[in-house]
Image: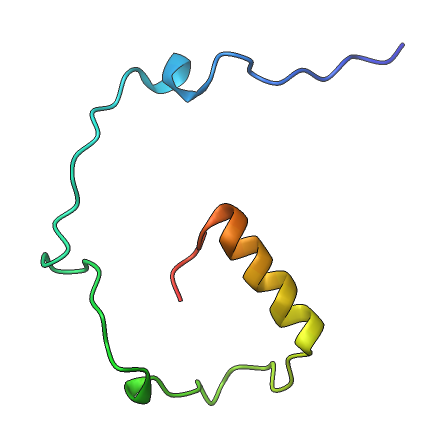
Length: 72
């Protein structure tokens, strides 16, 4: 007999309670900052050296749809 898998169905607030949204201070330590692209350098330990145009387009579409899920 197979057991039917079900989602939580009530959202995270059912587990965690109501959470107040606190505005983010972009100037705070660890906050968001704009930096010139010239200051960004490739990590020498990055195993991926070649990125296909198709993969870059898929990534761009994902970022447009969902935003950046993990900081760069």
